[in-house]
View 1: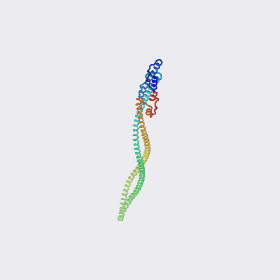
View 2: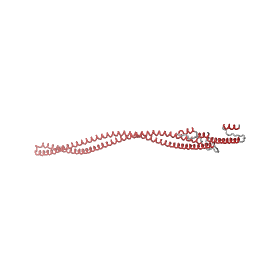
View 3: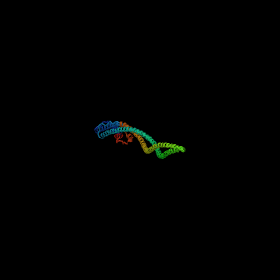
View 4: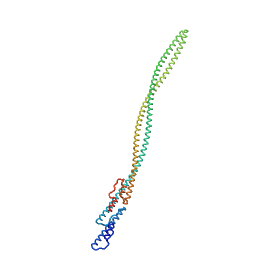
Length: 370
């Protein structure tokens, strides 16, 4: 009956019972063996239970320290090895969590710097875009003014050409006037010669009239009038010569001035043509620069779009880095108590593509309990 009681207790998981009735002979030896086995089993279970309870509370500083034999020695070795593996795994995970946290901090710092630089680049590009727009407006104004200058230069060229033609016509007219003056001078010389001859004839007539006496008195009066008329003609001829000589000097001066004006007008026409060519060249360069600035403005707009996209990506990366740092801190906090079930591992490490290590804490404790 006592043996049945002990066996029933063992079947119910109670190894604290002992055979207490005194027995003799072989039964006494059997009693000692049963009681010894119960004591060893109870001690092993008690120590294993204490260690497993400590593991469940995150205490990894425990081991089975009593001496056992047989299956209990194997159990002791397995439990102690499990604790060592748990310690190694958790230390490795803690180290990885620290590295993840450090990397997240570095990523956050880098992203902050990138974000600041991106903002600076965006501001610079906005200024460049505004400058490009202003330059486009200024070049458009310059192009318009250049076109107007081309028209003005062309009109000036036409006017200068017409002035040159008029100057040539003036020179030709002055030359003709000079030629006419020479003809008039020759005619005046003839008149002067005639007046001189008439004066001589009048003198001869007066002499002859004086010789004729009373009969030549009337002829003498006529001869005197003719002589006076010849004198006035000679005087007028001299005055005309002086006037013509003065006119010839003025004509020579006018001719020189007209020729000089013609040369200046030719130089002006040439200079206007050069200026016109330069303005046309400037206009072409302005159009080319305008097109180049338009292309630069397009590139700036594209860069602005890319920088905005990069800024959005940087913000997303910073958010992901913060989340990674928070999860690493949470994981490190949990590992600090030695508690890390597989569902927690997946929730913490799943977003980073990490797989659970073989033999997590819960699995190892379960293996040890079985």
